[in-house]
Figure (cartoon, one colour):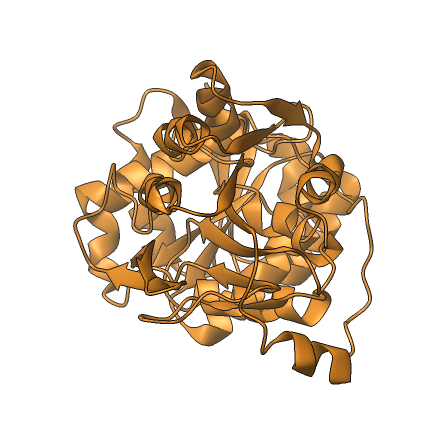
Length: 348
């Protein structure tokens, strides 16, 4: 039984969350709090296994509360966020501080009671309950400085490797331990599927770009892949790569979600596997579910090299575990070795 504490200043929202969870026998709501101050007073008494935490609250907001929880306890926290750019910014901040995952409030709050949202809420709470809480980054980064070398390099579209990375729960933090370690003259182009809504992937790309030597951006329809660039699949769009002449371009689509996911890593990786004349690397990192496992098989069968994050450093081991089970993973490595493993193959 997972003991859950709900922290939200809205009585209506607390009631919706309670109702969404009441049919699940594995989760019990042990208490509620109207703000961060009240939550911190109740945690030692209620001893919850998981906390849902609203970002915008009076007296003590969610970000401040989260910092106290991460400092004092090893309790997984799932943030409740609005589907706005401001909400995306603060959610990414929360994930950096130590939140495990987040749930977005739809524009119409009554949609929170839909079956799909109910499934998402229960799924993420259960994943958080078995996740690993991480307080500190293994690596600290300074913002990059763009100079003439970057400007010259960005004109070069030639590369030998296409690197496809898939991640979900725990991914935003994990990507910060990988992408910023790539040098700007990496002999490849990088594509990432991170399961996130629209707006959130743009904020993630901007954040990674500020930390990285490679250029990080959301992928755009018809965009030509370049060396030293990292393209994040935009939220709510599938992203593929297709050849066009002697170049490779991005294709975005609104095809139906695969197992509830759009973007889906399997589609991206399968398209990468089909590109001829390039070497391929497939990487599966922390995340819930099995997305990317089929794609890894395709990349391996196309003579690519495949990597999975190990269990110890994964916040949630679902995706890497599913990939490893296919027996098509060449190497299992901890998070802080993934960039090194890629660079030992790709070079500059």
